[in-house]
Image (cartoon, rainbow, N blue to C red; front, side, top):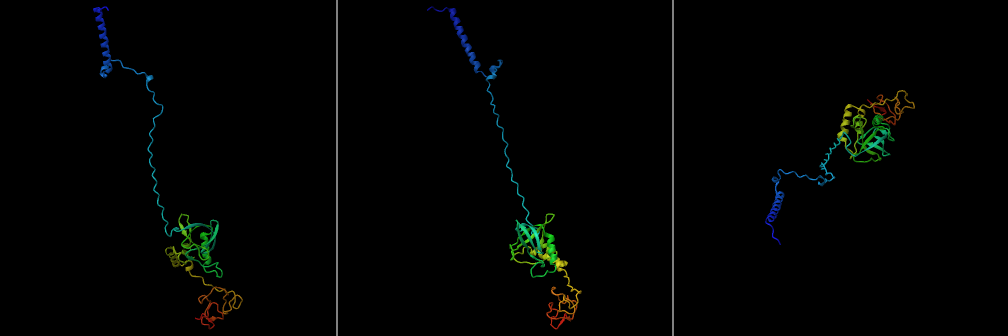
Length: 289
């Protein structure tokens, strides 16, 4: 092998040194911090190589559901005793007024007789009993209040009386929305008297007795002066239309019982059987003065 020439050896060494220095420069450039990039051209990224964002939208936050508060129930007003029904009730249609304290009603397609609790009116339809004073007036007053109307029936303790009639307080709705008890109204106007049969006495002390006192103090109806029966003067004594027990004047037979205050005079002749009892001592002279 031929030895290298000195000038060639120097050239090869210089080339090797240049390669080594070039490699050291590249290493320093790669490991240098931001300060080493000053004055260099910026590096651009190829947009085609950027990651494609996802097409799914980000979920929107759902609003927090507020709990719905339950409204506080308003307390229902309690029925006022004596001003409206306070016991078990049912609605009924009045189909017929029987007398002052009894009606016929329809409930659910069935017919019932209803007897008013706590009151009594003069008789008009009782078998074997003559029409009593104020009886027709009481029946007319009851008819004016309830005939054909829808009523509310309130029960006390008993369901029926011994005749099978419903025992009830009868209420009406007024035009202003208030209530009116028919039983009390008849007593207040003097068409009925208080008549109690325990245990059905719920309103006796609070309503019926005060109404009766007011009617009596005012002289209404039953508490007024009853008319005195006047024997008809058209028939002469001894005719067929006069009672033969009283030959001095004419008293028709069959009229309600009279006393001396109702007789047309005093010290008159009386013959048996003396149906009115004018001759108390049996001496044949009636209403001795």
